[in-house]
Image (cartoon, rainbow, N blue to C red; front, side):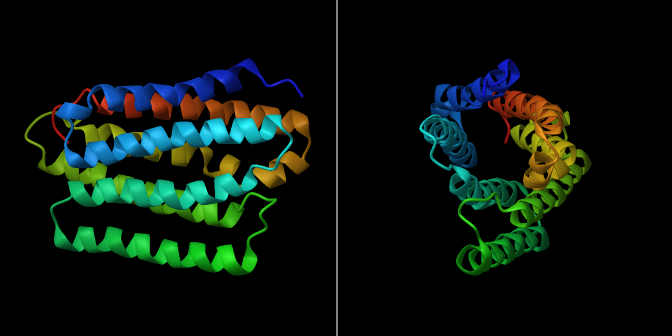
Length: 210
C-alpha cells in the first residue's frame, strides 16, 4: 500500500519540536527539558513504528506503550506549572488512576496485535481535562499575554489534538473495519491535527516563560 504524501508530512512534523527543544536546551527550564525528551522519544517512536511496518511486523504494541508515556509526560509538565496544591493533587491522582487502569488492561485485557481503543480514549480525555485547567489558570493569573508562556502552547496543542481526534484515534480499529476509503479520510484529518500539534509544541520553545 502506498503511503499518502500527507502522512509523510505529518511524520516529518515530529522532528520540528524535537529539534527546537534540543536547540534551546541550555536556556530551557527543567520541565521544558523533560518535554524535549518527550518530543525526542515521540520522534524515535515514530521511526520504530515505520521500521517495523516496513518489515511487515506488527507495531500496535508500540502505540499501547506510547499512551502512558505521553500522559505521564504531559501531566508532569502541567503539575510543574500549576501552583495550587489541590490542582497538583488532582494531576497526581489522574496519573495514578490512569497508570493503574493501564496496568490492569496491559496484563489482563490487552491484545498486543490490536490498538487499545478504550485506554487511548481515557488518556485523551484525561489530558484534555488537564489542558482546560492549565489554560484557565494561565488566563486568570498571568500578568502578561498567555501566548508568552510555553505551557499555554503545550496545553492548547493537547486540547486541540484531543478534541479533534479523540474519536478518530480511539476508534481506529472500527474505522479501519469500515473500509480503506473511510480510513483514509479520517486519518487525513488526524494527520492535519498532528501537524498543528507539533507546530504548537515547537512554538512553546520560543517562549521565555514556562
